[in-house]
Image (cartoon, rainbow, N blue to C red):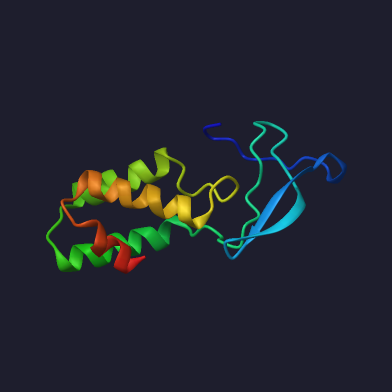
Length: 118
């Protein structure tokens, strides 16, 4: 849900779902969900990163290749629009895939360069 502040459900209301740690299934674990929008909270070991981390990567790309301030601004706006900073519903892998797609959309740069900086 766009713009949801994600309010955790109560402890007794958690749902039992598969839990993954370092890419391996570790059985079931109670997961909280948002009482407002119903989104289940990410409990994986791949914690997402903040938008500043990804903007630093854009800065590194700018050092290697000429990009405009408008391109940087469009990337930042797209990251915000797609809620790349939603730590509740995304894991790092999902976040990185979204970031790569956003950068490629606005900058003509090979995916491998972005991957190297992640």
